[in-house]
Length: 257
Image (cartoon, rainbow, N blue to C red; front, side, top):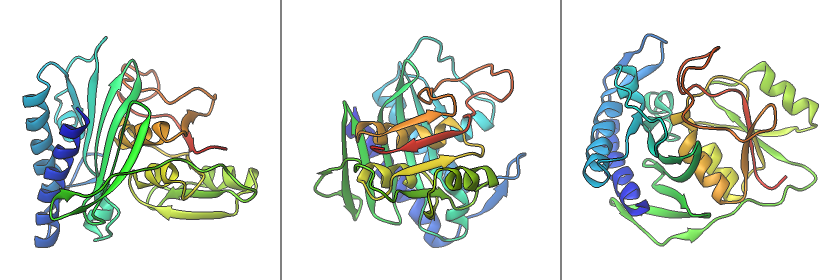
């Protein structure tokens, strides 16, 4: 399965880069977030690949949900897809955008792929094994295992480039964390999984398709993503009393703390 997810992400990334280099057409959703022709084209590629390979596994995909297409996932495995995570990065021509595909089982992200086409790198994980490889000319190079590092005396944090909040900065201050870097998209999870940083607090809105693939890689690399109450971040959240379907609560992703 993971090889098919990787292949789908690479194909979507190739389409994204064609539009990136040509100049995307940008529109805006009801929540004012941008969406481009690259989002739609990449999602169509991924959905077609998944439907062919796994016709019995439903897919929750960002743009399909925005259009009102939400399959029944009750009691099932399902995929979560963000065809272009970091659309603002993409529009601003910052290379920190990714293709995210994750498999969810019983609310847990058990496999995931994060491909950063402009950075020419792919991260993937399943069965407790996380790895990273370069991508050149649409071909995946040699895979290398990755893992979280033990946190030293001066932890390094990652924060959102576009969606930082006062609560996030307060959390860093309360925990004596002074070193932090702003990074876009799900690359923050991947950097934690590689052992290049230690913690990523997110005290602003995210959706499940934003986090699932990176979270799968982080967990396989020895890290965790927990909500404020201390339990693992769960997936497949529907009929939430205080938020929309598939919206995440605030969380902290971290390596070996």
